[in-house]
Length: 282
Image 1 (tube, helix red, strand yellow):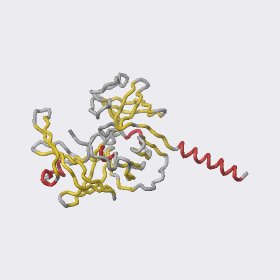
Image 2 (cartoon, one colour; image 1 turned 90 degrees about the vertical axis):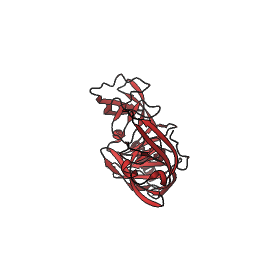
Image 3 (cartoon, helix red, strand yellow; image 1 turned 90 degrees about the horizontal axis):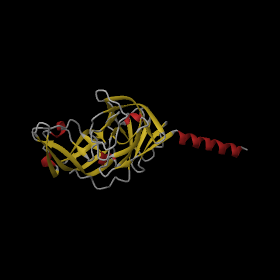
Image 4 (tube, helix red, strand yellow; image 1 turned 60 degrees about the vertical axis):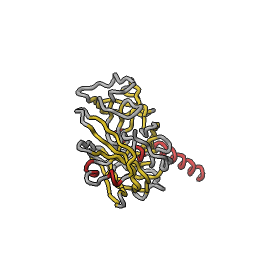
């Protein structure tokens, strides 16, 4: 009888653990972006790119799928319902006319994880949402800094033999590695201190030239994990538009991430993409 009771207890405990978490499948594009399939207002089936640097959702003017049942006023739509698999999320705000990544009709942010711990599981192509923190064996904790729904981490950058501490915005919409802000890059002559691999000149809306360069950062340390030969971009010339340092999708996918519910700490562990070749910016 005692053994039977123990068996039932363990069975119930196991059932509780399974029920205490939810999973959301996703796919990763060749541009390192995460795509989630959603149904909006029971009518519009959309592929949305997960953007960790925002809380709400948005629709792109370049989408390939119709979104006729998201009603906008002054480019904002409140009170929407989205379904991902069997899970329903209510009161989702959409913004209109925001550009997104390849293969996506718009973006979905971290608001669907509000108040919960969640994991970006790149190894198994899924998000996991927890009621309680999971086993953190083999994970390392690093401080997470939040501002206006955006997340920042600190990483050490080795530039010309000097170690420089940099605050990076986690930016899953940028396919590459690092992008340095104007504030960080100015005065550091990165075009002479990094191995330069490419240059791109674009025109802004006023017809002015905006120049970016791509280089190789020899070492970057995130917590105790070291990434080598990281792709790093920065702006040069008189016109510069980069206000923040980016930790892009090519670096994000090299780890599995578990975010605490209070968003003060994130736990990272190298995943199956850790040693993959770096994404090349065209």
